[in-house]
Image 1 (cartoon, rainbow, N blue to C red):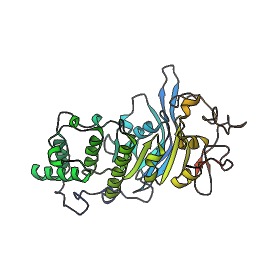
Image 2: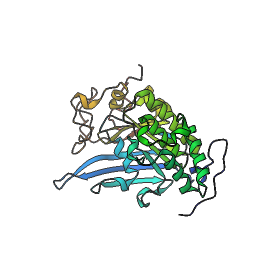
Image 3: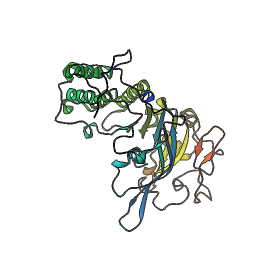
Length: 341
Protein backbone atom coordinates (compact mmCIF):
# COMPACT_ATOMS: atom_id res chain seq x y z
CA UNK A 1 0.00 0.00 0.00
CA UNK A 2 1.40 3.38 -1.02
CA UNK A 3 2.14 5.82 1.77
CA UNK A 4 1.15 9.47 1.80
CA UNK A 5 3.32 12.33 2.93
CA UNK A 6 3.89 12.78 6.64
CA UNK A 7 1.02 14.59 8.35
CA UNK A 8 1.41 18.19 9.43
CA UNK A 9 0.41 19.26 12.89
CA UNK A 10 -2.49 21.70 13.14
CA UNK A 11 -4.21 23.50 15.98
CA UNK A 12 -6.94 20.85 15.87
CA UNK A 13 -4.68 17.87 16.39
CA UNK A 14 -2.60 15.59 14.21
CA UNK A 15 -3.54 17.17 10.87
CA UNK A 16 -5.08 14.08 9.27
CA UNK A 17 -7.16 14.72 6.14
CA UNK A 18 -10.83 14.79 7.03
CA UNK A 19 -13.59 12.95 5.16
CA UNK A 20 -14.96 16.20 3.74
CA UNK A 21 -11.60 17.10 2.18
CA UNK A 22 -10.84 13.65 0.82
CA UNK A 23 -12.69 13.97 -2.48
CA UNK A 24 -15.95 12.32 -1.41
CA UNK A 25 -18.20 15.37 -1.20
CA UNK A 26 -21.43 15.35 -3.22
CA UNK A 27 -24.76 17.18 -3.07
CA UNK A 28 -26.90 14.61 -1.23
CA UNK A 29 -26.80 13.31 2.34
CA UNK A 30 -23.73 11.51 3.55
CA UNK A 31 -25.72 8.35 4.28
CA UNK A 32 -29.05 7.40 2.76
CA UNK A 33 -30.82 4.22 3.82
CA UNK A 34 -33.87 3.42 1.67
CA UNK A 35 -36.36 0.65 2.48
CA UNK A 36 -33.75 -1.55 4.15
CA UNK A 37 -35.11 -5.04 4.77
CA UNK A 38 -33.01 -7.86 6.20
CA UNK A 39 -34.20 -11.45 6.48
CA UNK A 40 -32.67 -14.78 7.47
CA UNK A 41 -33.40 -18.40 6.61
CA UNK A 42 -35.75 -19.72 9.29
CA UNK A 43 -34.61 -23.34 8.76
CA UNK A 44 -38.02 -24.40 7.46
CA UNK A 45 -37.84 -23.09 3.93
CA UNK A 46 -39.13 -19.65 4.87
CA UNK A 47 -37.64 -16.38 6.00
CA UNK A 48 -37.50 -14.52 9.30
CA UNK A 49 -37.75 -10.79 8.67
CA UNK A 50 -35.50 -9.04 11.17
CA UNK A 51 -35.63 -5.53 9.66
CA UNK A 52 -38.47 -4.27 7.51
CA UNK A 53 -38.58 -1.18 5.30
CA UNK A 54 -36.22 1.04 7.36
CA UNK A 55 -35.36 4.42 5.82
CA UNK A 56 -33.44 7.46 7.08
CA UNK A 57 -30.84 10.02 5.95
CA UNK A 58 -27.84 11.48 7.73
CA UNK A 59 -26.29 14.74 6.51
CA UNK A 60 -22.62 15.60 6.70
CA UNK A 61 -21.45 16.78 10.11
CA UNK A 62 -24.80 15.81 11.63
CA UNK A 63 -26.00 13.10 13.98
CA UNK A 64 -29.03 10.80 13.92
CA UNK A 65 -29.99 8.56 16.83
CA UNK A 66 -31.81 5.23 16.62
CA UNK A 67 -33.71 4.44 19.80
CA UNK A 68 -35.50 1.25 20.79
CA UNK A 69 -35.58 -1.53 23.33
CA UNK A 70 -33.42 -4.66 23.22
CA UNK A 71 -34.16 -6.62 20.05
CA UNK A 72 -35.63 -3.63 18.22
CA UNK A 73 -33.13 -3.90 15.36
CA UNK A 74 -30.64 -1.17 16.24
CA UNK A 75 -27.50 -3.30 16.12
CA UNK A 76 -28.63 -5.14 12.98
CA UNK A 77 -29.16 -1.79 11.26
CA UNK A 78 -25.59 -0.84 12.13
CA UNK A 79 -24.21 -4.21 10.98
CA UNK A 80 -26.07 -3.84 7.70
CA UNK A 81 -23.94 -0.79 6.93
CA UNK A 82 -21.05 -3.26 6.65
CA UNK A 83 -22.81 -6.00 4.64
CA UNK A 84 -19.75 -8.25 4.51
CA UNK A 85 -20.02 -8.67 8.29
CA UNK A 86 -23.52 -10.13 8.13
CA UNK A 87 -24.11 -13.91 8.37
CA UNK A 88 -23.98 -15.82 5.09
CA UNK A 89 -27.73 -16.52 5.11
CA UNK A 90 -28.70 -12.86 5.43
CA UNK A 91 -30.69 -11.39 2.56
CA UNK A 92 -30.77 -7.63 2.13
CA UNK A 93 -33.20 -5.57 0.10
CA UNK A 94 -33.36 -1.81 -0.35
CA UNK A 95 -30.52 0.64 -0.87
CA UNK A 96 -27.73 2.02 1.32
CA UNK A 97 -25.80 4.90 -0.22
CA UNK A 98 -22.67 6.50 1.20
CA UNK A 99 -22.02 9.79 -0.58
CA UNK A 100 -24.24 8.52 -3.38
CA UNK A 101 -22.44 5.19 -3.84
CA UNK A 102 -24.00 1.81 -3.07
CA UNK A 103 -22.26 0.37 -0.02
CA UNK A 104 -22.89 -3.20 -1.16
CA UNK A 105 -20.81 -2.68 -4.28
CA UNK A 106 -17.70 -1.74 -2.31
CA UNK A 107 -15.09 -4.34 -1.34
CA UNK A 108 -14.86 -5.24 2.38
CA UNK A 109 -13.46 -2.50 4.59
CA UNK A 110 -13.45 0.23 1.95
CA UNK A 111 -16.79 1.98 2.43
CA UNK A 112 -15.52 4.55 4.95
CA UNK A 113 -17.87 3.42 7.72
CA UNK A 114 -16.52 2.74 11.22
CA UNK A 115 -18.78 0.85 13.62
CA UNK A 116 -17.72 1.04 17.26
CA UNK A 117 -18.87 -2.30 18.63
CA UNK A 118 -20.40 -2.74 22.06
CA UNK A 119 -17.22 -4.48 23.28
CA UNK A 120 -13.87 -2.86 22.32
CA UNK A 121 -12.03 -6.13 23.02
CA UNK A 122 -13.60 -7.48 19.84
CA UNK A 123 -11.51 -4.94 17.93
CA UNK A 124 -8.34 -4.28 19.97
CA UNK A 125 -5.48 -6.75 19.66
CA UNK A 126 -4.93 -8.28 23.13
CA UNK A 127 -1.26 -9.19 22.49
CA UNK A 128 -0.07 -5.77 21.33
CA UNK A 129 0.23 -2.64 23.44
CA UNK A 130 -2.07 0.27 22.72
CA UNK A 131 0.96 2.28 21.67
CA UNK A 132 1.96 -0.35 19.12
CA UNK A 133 -1.57 -0.48 17.71
CA UNK A 134 -1.90 3.29 17.38
CA UNK A 135 1.63 3.64 16.00
CA UNK A 136 0.95 0.93 13.41
CA UNK A 137 -2.20 2.79 12.37
CA UNK A 138 -0.25 6.01 11.81
CA UNK A 139 2.52 4.27 9.88
CA UNK A 140 0.00 2.37 7.76
CA UNK A 141 -1.50 5.68 6.69
CA UNK A 142 1.63 7.83 6.51
CA UNK A 143 5.26 7.33 5.55
CA UNK A 144 6.76 8.46 8.86
CA UNK A 145 9.35 7.23 11.35
CA UNK A 146 8.54 5.09 14.38
CA UNK A 147 9.53 7.98 16.63
CA UNK A 148 7.19 10.46 14.94
CA UNK A 149 4.37 7.90 14.84
CA UNK A 150 4.79 7.28 18.56
CA UNK A 151 4.65 11.02 19.25
CA UNK A 152 1.43 11.31 17.24
CA UNK A 153 -0.02 8.33 19.09
CA UNK A 154 0.82 10.05 22.37
CA UNK A 155 -0.93 13.22 21.21
CA UNK A 156 -3.98 11.20 20.11
CA UNK A 157 -4.25 9.63 23.57
CA UNK A 158 -3.95 13.05 25.19
CA UNK A 159 -6.75 14.41 22.98
CA UNK A 160 -9.21 11.74 24.16
CA UNK A 161 -8.42 12.15 27.85
CA UNK A 162 -6.50 8.95 28.62
CA UNK A 163 -4.65 9.50 31.93
CA UNK A 164 -0.84 9.26 31.97
CA UNK A 165 -0.77 8.77 28.18
CA UNK A 166 2.99 8.18 27.97
CA UNK A 167 2.74 5.29 30.42
CA UNK A 168 -0.47 4.08 28.76
CA UNK A 169 1.33 3.60 25.44
CA UNK A 170 3.07 0.59 26.99
CA UNK A 171 -0.10 -0.97 28.40
CA UNK A 172 -2.15 -3.75 26.87
CA UNK A 173 -5.92 -3.44 26.31
CA UNK A 174 -6.73 -5.67 29.30
CA UNK A 175 -4.94 -3.19 31.58
CA UNK A 176 -7.64 -0.57 30.86
CA UNK A 177 -11.17 -0.24 32.15
CA UNK A 178 -14.02 -0.59 29.68
CA UNK A 179 -14.41 3.19 29.43
CA UNK A 180 -10.69 3.66 28.72
CA UNK A 181 -10.77 1.00 25.99
CA UNK A 182 -13.43 3.03 24.25
CA UNK A 183 -11.15 6.05 24.52
CA UNK A 184 -8.38 4.07 22.85
CA UNK A 185 -10.80 3.40 19.99
CA UNK A 186 -11.62 7.11 19.94
CA UNK A 187 -7.91 7.89 19.64
CA UNK A 188 -7.77 5.63 16.58
CA UNK A 189 -10.57 7.67 14.98
CA UNK A 190 -8.33 10.74 14.99
CA UNK A 191 -5.79 8.76 12.95
CA UNK A 192 -8.04 7.45 10.20
CA UNK A 193 -11.30 9.43 10.29
CA UNK A 194 -14.28 7.62 8.74
CA UNK A 195 -16.88 9.34 6.62
CA UNK A 196 -19.54 7.67 8.77
CA UNK A 197 -19.17 6.81 12.45
CA UNK A 198 -21.62 4.43 14.13
CA UNK A 199 -21.62 3.99 17.90
CA UNK A 200 -23.63 1.14 19.42
CA UNK A 201 -24.60 1.36 23.08
CA UNK A 202 -21.52 0.29 25.07
CA UNK A 203 -21.56 -2.73 27.34
CA UNK A 204 -20.71 -2.43 31.02
CA UNK A 205 -20.72 1.36 31.36
CA UNK A 206 -23.00 3.35 33.62
CA UNK A 207 -25.08 6.17 32.20
CA UNK A 208 -22.60 8.83 33.25
CA UNK A 209 -19.69 7.11 31.50
CA UNK A 210 -21.83 6.48 28.41
CA UNK A 211 -22.86 10.12 28.21
CA UNK A 212 -19.27 11.32 28.59
CA UNK A 213 -18.03 8.90 25.93
CA UNK A 214 -20.82 9.85 23.53
CA UNK A 215 -19.95 13.53 23.89
CA UNK A 216 -16.27 12.82 23.25
CA UNK A 217 -16.95 10.80 20.09
CA UNK A 218 -19.39 13.37 18.73
CA UNK A 219 -16.83 16.13 19.29
CA UNK A 220 -14.19 14.11 17.42
CA UNK A 221 -16.60 13.33 14.59
CA UNK A 222 -17.50 16.99 14.20
CA UNK A 223 -13.83 17.97 14.13
CA UNK A 224 -12.86 15.42 11.48
CA UNK A 225 -16.03 15.89 9.40
CA UNK A 226 -17.75 12.54 9.98
CA UNK A 227 -21.50 11.98 10.09
CA UNK A 228 -22.68 10.06 13.17
CA UNK A 229 -25.26 7.37 13.90
CA UNK A 230 -25.88 6.70 17.62
CA UNK A 231 -27.78 3.67 18.91
CA UNK A 232 -29.31 3.52 22.39
CA UNK A 233 -32.08 2.04 24.50
CA UNK A 234 -32.08 5.24 26.52
CA UNK A 235 -33.09 8.31 24.47
CA UNK A 236 -31.89 10.75 27.15
CA UNK A 237 -28.29 9.58 26.71
CA UNK A 238 -28.05 10.59 23.06
CA UNK A 239 -30.84 13.09 22.36
CA UNK A 240 -28.68 16.13 23.13
CA UNK A 241 -26.29 15.20 20.32
CA UNK A 242 -28.84 14.27 17.65
CA UNK A 243 -30.50 16.37 14.97
CA UNK A 244 -33.11 13.65 14.42
CA UNK A 245 -34.27 10.57 16.31
CA UNK A 246 -35.59 7.34 14.78
CA UNK A 247 -37.56 4.87 16.90
CA UNK A 248 -37.50 1.17 16.02
CA UNK A 249 -39.70 -1.60 17.32
CA UNK A 250 -39.45 -5.27 16.26
CA UNK A 251 -37.33 -4.32 13.26
CA UNK A 252 -39.74 -1.72 11.92
CA UNK A 253 -39.40 2.05 11.90
CA UNK A 254 -42.12 3.60 14.04
CA UNK A 255 -41.15 7.28 13.91
CA UNK A 256 -38.53 9.58 12.38
CA UNK A 257 -38.56 13.21 13.50
CA UNK A 258 -36.48 16.19 14.49
CA UNK A 259 -35.23 15.62 18.00
CA UNK A 260 -37.06 18.55 19.59
CA UNK A 261 -40.34 17.57 17.90
CA UNK A 262 -40.08 13.96 18.97
CA UNK A 263 -39.24 14.83 22.58
CA UNK A 264 -41.92 17.49 22.91
CA UNK A 265 -44.71 15.54 21.24
CA UNK A 266 -44.04 11.95 20.16
CA UNK A 267 -46.27 10.89 17.27
CA UNK A 268 -46.25 7.12 17.82
CA UNK A 269 -47.45 5.48 21.06
CA UNK A 270 -44.38 3.22 21.11
CA UNK A 271 -42.07 6.25 21.01
CA UNK A 272 -44.02 7.79 23.89
CA UNK A 273 -43.68 4.58 25.92
CA UNK A 274 -39.96 4.49 25.17
CA UNK A 275 -39.49 8.06 26.32
CA UNK A 276 -41.28 7.21 29.55
CA UNK A 277 -38.80 4.39 30.13
CA UNK A 278 -41.27 1.55 29.49
CA UNK A 279 -39.87 -1.54 27.77
CA UNK A 280 -42.70 -2.77 25.58
CA UNK A 281 -41.44 -6.35 25.55
CA UNK A 282 -42.02 -6.54 29.32
CA UNK A 283 -45.75 -5.89 28.98
CA UNK A 284 -46.94 -8.92 27.07
CA UNK A 285 -45.82 -8.26 23.49
CA UNK A 286 -43.74 -10.95 21.76
CA UNK A 287 -40.00 -10.29 22.02
CA UNK A 288 -39.05 -7.46 19.70
CA UNK A 289 -36.53 -9.62 17.85
CA UNK A 290 -39.27 -12.02 16.65
CA UNK A 291 -42.46 -9.96 16.60
CA UNK A 292 -42.42 -9.00 12.91
CA UNK A 293 -41.96 -12.44 11.34
CA UNK A 294 -45.55 -12.80 10.11
CA UNK A 295 -47.46 -9.91 11.70
CA UNK A 296 -49.52 -7.49 9.63
CA UNK A 297 -50.57 -4.03 10.67
CA UNK A 298 -49.06 -2.16 13.56
CA UNK A 299 -46.72 -4.45 15.48
CA UNK A 300 -47.37 -2.47 18.67
CA UNK A 301 -51.15 -2.71 18.56
CA UNK A 302 -51.41 -5.65 21.00
CA UNK A 303 -50.44 -3.46 23.94
CA UNK A 304 -51.05 0.02 22.56
CA UNK A 305 -53.51 2.00 24.75
CA UNK A 306 -54.60 3.92 21.65
CA UNK A 307 -55.25 0.95 19.35
CA UNK A 308 -58.49 0.99 17.36
CA UNK A 309 -60.30 -1.07 14.76
CA UNK A 310 -58.18 -0.96 11.62
CA UNK A 311 -54.77 -1.07 13.31
CA UNK A 312 -54.48 -4.66 12.08
CA UNK A 313 -54.11 -3.29 8.55
CA UNK A 314 -50.61 -2.51 7.30
CA UNK A 315 -50.23 1.20 7.72
CA UNK A 316 -48.17 3.56 5.56
CA UNK A 317 -45.56 5.96 6.85
CA UNK A 318 -47.42 9.25 7.29
CA UNK A 319 -45.49 12.52 6.84
CA UNK A 320 -46.74 15.76 8.39
CA UNK A 321 -45.97 19.35 7.39
CA UNK A 322 -42.92 19.49 9.69
CA UNK A 323 -41.37 16.44 8.02
CA UNK A 324 -42.12 14.12 10.95
CA UNK A 325 -42.72 10.54 9.80
CA UNK A 326 -44.79 8.09 11.84
CA UNK A 327 -46.16 4.64 11.05
CA UNK A 328 -49.45 5.14 12.86
CA UNK A 329 -53.01 5.36 11.61
CA UNK A 330 -53.68 8.01 14.28
CA UNK A 331 -50.69 10.21 13.45
CA UNK A 332 -51.69 13.85 14.05
CA UNK A 333 -54.75 12.86 16.05
CA UNK A 334 -53.20 11.71 19.33
CA UNK A 335 -51.92 14.12 21.98
CA UNK A 336 -49.19 11.94 23.44
CA UNK A 337 -47.24 12.90 26.54
CA UNK A 338 -44.09 14.92 26.01
CA UNK A 339 -40.90 14.32 27.98
CA UNK A 340 -41.55 15.59 31.48
CA UNK A 341 -45.19 16.21 30.63
